[in-house]
Image (cartoon, rainbow, N blue to C red):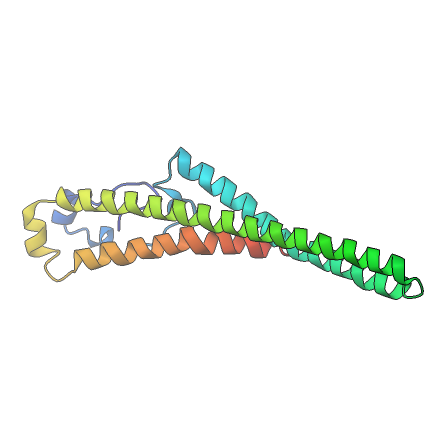
Length: 177
């Protein structure tokens, strides 16, 4: 695909001069993944990131609440009425936490998947535009043995997977610690 760091597409002039390094695959930087993002995408990533952080922070909170419930079982075993109310209160906290986890995980996944779809569509469009701008001679010489549509599709799927899944999962795991 194009060089994501600078946003430039290899020109036909560079290809005519025999500069094959512009056609070789290069790894994109982390910020290069978000090359095609606009303000709406950054807003979606912000909300998705916050939701993923909330989802990740829920596991330590769960351990604290579960520990309180176990403590109440041990300390209040002599008083069955207060034991019942304390366990009910802690159980209700766990249910609330479950609802928060459900909502935050849904929002996080929805936001990151949406921004991944939007950015991938933009990248495909830009890549197709750059291919269509090429001189017809390029397709007879350099691109004769390359399946351009396959590369557009496979690269776009990799970018979408990186933006939509891997970034949000990394945020979630980082905030579980």
